[in-house]
Amino acid sequence: MNLLSPNVSAIGYLLAAVCFILALKGLSSPASARRGNLIGAGGAVLAVLVAFLSESLHHVPLILLAIGVGSAVGVPAARRVAMTQMPQLVALFNGVGGGAAALVAALELTEHGDPGAIGAAAGAFTILVGCVSFSGSVVTFAKLQELMTTRPVTFPGGPFLFGGSLLVGVLLGVVIAVQGSGGKPSVLLLVLLALVALVVGVLFVLPVGGADVPIVISLLNAFTGLTVAASGYVLGNTLLLVAGTLVGASGTILTRLMAAAMGRPLTSTLFGAFRASTAVAAVAGDERPVRSGSAEDVAILLGYARKVVIVPGYGLAVAQAQHTLRELAELLEARGVEVLYGIHPVAGRMPGHMNVLLAEANVPYEVLKEMDEVNPQLRTADVALVVGANDVVNPAAKTSPGAPIYGMPILDVDQAQQVVFLKRSMRPGFAGIENELLYDPKTLMLFGDAKDSLSAVVSAVKTL
Image (cartoon, rainbow, N blue to C red):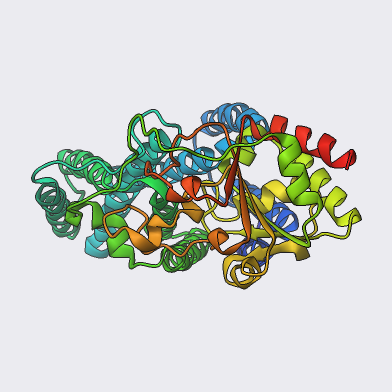
């Protein structure tokens, strides 16, 4: 029984679409991101309510059970996830969205009459891209969680296997579209398409590694948006079309921006590992001397500086040291030191990772400087304090053509008068390559957990 008239339902869907647009607008700035999330969630709830009240639904108890199970899994996962694991959660949620769209499209094609050639083509597209997004997102999760190597995985014939699998998937989609013009597509063909697409997704992501993984997550997010839009066409649901298009467009724009921030074309990010002939790897057992110091040494450098630029990275998030870092910055500012934060576009494991982390510690937005803005400041800085970052300050991005990060713009911390690195060990960063800056005579290493090290430095600064 439909409790809402078609006009009221249309208005409800329109309001939900407006909420999604306003949510994207809110997410464009850290200051309004929380409000944007709430608006987007409100729009999703409204869309679900309108669907329940305006459609003649079957199997309502099963639908409610599925919603309950999903909520029971999703809510605790979202609330308990650590900030360091947020990118992995985003990858999984994105993959689930693509897989769900593929399943819905497959069921729609097999259960409801003659879809027509266009409807069958849209369904085949949804299955193909949705399964690519699902399996690719699972691989990115495994890389970020370090369940597998974070480096690019290549093997002889890999590009040909990927290209051949993709071609087979497209051909299967064409056959399904032709079948759909005269009746229901074959279930066997739909299953084959899904299996081939899953293989394509794995082969698509395996050659990507290091700091490029977040870019692939963004691209797969765009893929999921496209599948949702296509499933909206298959289901005749305008709201899904609008929401999917918004996600697809925003994900594509973000992917392009991130690729630009890495300083090379997206094709190089995705397929560069196949062409690379050399690589710069960490040297096992490297015995070159490094200059290490104590918390008191670092406190003296910072406490008597005129300008300090702080460069946060993934190690800061792992140690949950953002509050201690803010305390240190406030102590330095009380001594008359100018303190800025240099934020690289891909610092951490996803765009905005460091912004969100520092916002948790109530660090003012105005002191968070983007790379292009802070690099000129580094040339006049007395100290660059690098906390848990590595790849985003690694000179190999400029000097080593075979390095996975070659061509990526970096924060020029080597331009500062002194560089202080807070690291657990000499282990290389996420890209798995050595950082020559660690051996520079003007670099001072403070080894240990970032939170413990910063707490010691805070105590030492108080005694100056």
